[in-house]
Length: 182
Image (cartoon, rainbow, N blue to C red; front, side, top):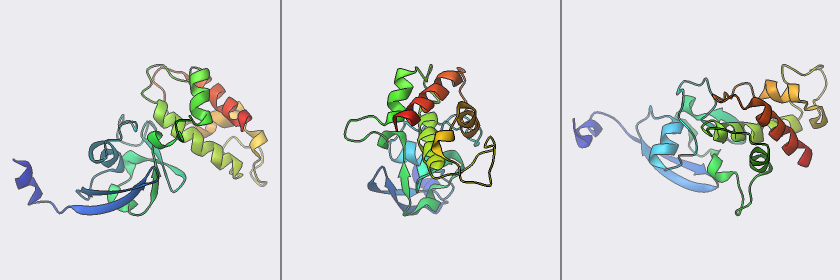
């Protein structure tokens, strides 16, 4: 079936997104995931498509400052929201402290999970700074303090991001170092 004949059977929707601080307009089939829209419509291939069912974290992006698995989010439901991908983490050619720490601590091997790991780590650090507890937090009745972000806390908070190469110790060290740097 040709592309034009497919279009006559499917309603498409126009969606305005703010991706990496730039307003972008896409026309997608309503069932298109944010992951596929980022990769196929906008050419932002840093967000990886791995499990495509919300199990691995390789597709992690930020939506309005919160980490989200983009393979589980519909693009059409993100209209007007601020989306950040790995391509938008560095600023004016300067790497984010988490990116720098990943390089210095060799927090990647094959690199496939790296963009999702970094996006999750950046948001996780912001969550910890905001006082959010985790399942590893000793006393959830009081506000969490960033100085309490131990390696155990980091492991728990990053548990949704999988690494096939098992670089977990280096990833945890990189995140701990980025937190120390502020």
